[in-house]
View 1 (cartoon, rainbow, N blue to C red):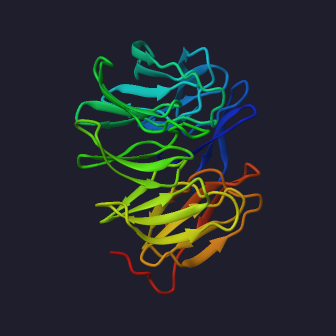
View 2 (view 1 turned 180 degrees about the vertical axis):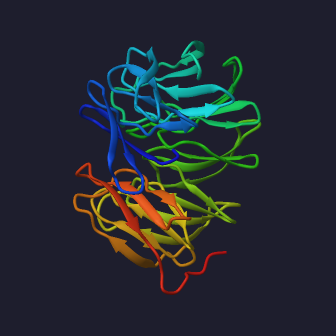
Length: 319
């Protein structure tokens, strides 16, 4: 956000750094740490924490503006839309809070009878007055953003070991693209919740829409390029170690981290590797891009925050 880089950790809190030189600007201690990504608007940082609270922080100082007790750890990235912040708690409850005051506007709680679950949570997605979010029981649900009324729901993953939908739904026109962890990638109509097509292979992170194709990081350790119209495969890149993070477009390339390996740069047309950066002990955070400055930021498996300059002597082709 602005001149800041904000990094949480799973031990004791969240901190901000100068994005130009990495100087620490502030740290806010939080019991049991902060694991999900934060959401920003102007001078505010919104983030859930493992101490059972959701926080609004002053971006310049880290001071707590307000907190909201969810009575459960919070593992999903929040969504901020039209003055309302939406997020899922670890208890499978979707909250809508007034972003200015932290007052609860509405909530929706969903029971999951499964005994096991993947650690994480789906970031809600907004479009045309509706909130779309996946739950740990394998359901994708559409809500009226104003009052939380359920518009439709569809059960996507029924018979797998892990039914979780932790990947955030991605909306393109009237299509929603979302995956179950060890299930499939689904294309669902946003207006009716009808399944339009599905492709075998689950995912933990959201996919990336790139022109007429989908770039899909799977929980099986692949990055796949698919036709947006029907999910047909165009190419597959096999990750060397672990599973890939979400994929970002950067100066004609695709960039993503390997959970036990390197930061990878891949050709979007062929899926061929163009370069890598090895930080040690893998990358669990999705890379953040500053294309104007020519920088890529990420957090390594050793909890080190990196800023690297990335460029090319020959510009890769990008449609």
